[in-house]
Image (cartoon, rainbow, N blue to C red; front, side):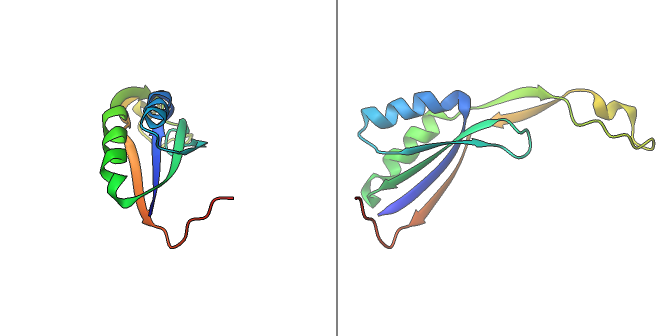
Length: 109
């Protein structure tokens, strides 16, 4: 048994959640916030048999897309900074961060 923790962008979470349901994969869905852009994420916690890990990872891979978006960096009041620092910059967001962890024990009550 393994625990898969997958952090995906909110825009991809509903589609992934629906695919999990269709594939009979049980997942706990948590609303989380990213640190860099402070944007909404969804974290899925999935307890799964080892022989189904590749199936779960493929579903995550096919639904979690990277995309580009503009963000405005926080304003820095330091006079020595270049004034262009407050203009929007294009950053890549989305995709998924996935952890696969061993599980010593699994119990359901």
